[in-house]
Image (cartoon, rainbow, N blue to C red; front, side, top):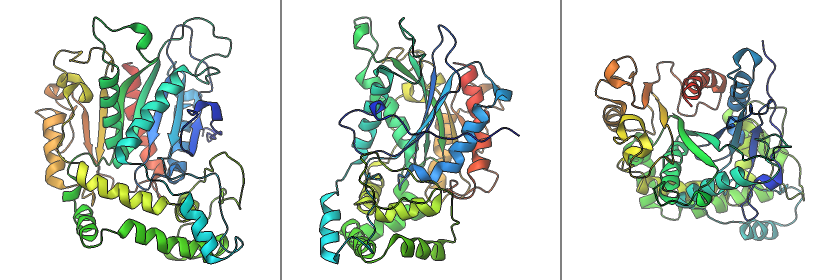
Length: 414
């Protein structure tokens, strides 16, 4: 049995200076890239709520598999999981000790800021640009003075994180088109090569069973995000972290982890917690996170509709010219889409439609790759293991085993 990987704090200089507070789980490669080869970064984007701590066990197991000497691919592979903007804070307030109800509520409201779905996409693109150009990069040898090969990026997203992955690649291709007149110095030092989309909500999420319920609720109660946040703020201001943790555990049956939410802190470094219990506690206590989650969910219902991404985003045979209108900016793009069976956030008919239209003519039940005519298309898989949409709670290691296999196939073609 190989030892479990351990995430380290992401050095502050690896985030853009104006970046919002962002919690991270970073697993740097244990080896430098071989001379003349590109390092590989797997960037993981969570669903909604966008707290990376929910994926602690999943990412640890995935990193342990990838970094195991028994699975050496010859590549230097790092993994970075990031929370979405609006779901991180550098300060934890203990409601049982932080003063009066109104003072605590006013203080929390000052820290509330909303980050739209579109802004979440642009922020991730800014992050990749910064990571590929920053000095003292963890992806290259410290004494590297020669021209650095471009960082090869694989995207991995869960739920709405999958939508953000596809939109991120599209934004990248639009911002950095590769044409005969392109100036090399204006190109970023990274390329995106697809990745894995887990339980993706990438079309018509409002038609899903849960999407229909949420759409009706928001239509009847437009103030839901603000109301829910107000009630949570009162609860957090009145109760201590200890009491809140107990109540969450009582309702959810989540188990304690070895990484509890720290007590009040004044550090400027965003806090990252691990496990569903502590992540749910953080979700309640981070100023504005419930408002962020519900308002972003309303945007998801309204904006995630038809599959309108061009062939260059889906890659393979969908990019008829091989390089498409955007040139070679994306390189070889290969996606693996892993859909849930009876996923309450995905409409079954829309799921089957995208499997057929994007997975190839011979795709049946999502098992493309078994037939010759499906090669070159995104690999579509429908879960037969009974995993829930929220796999990160209790099923992270099982999911990591499958993801590792798909990533091996993608990396072998880079």
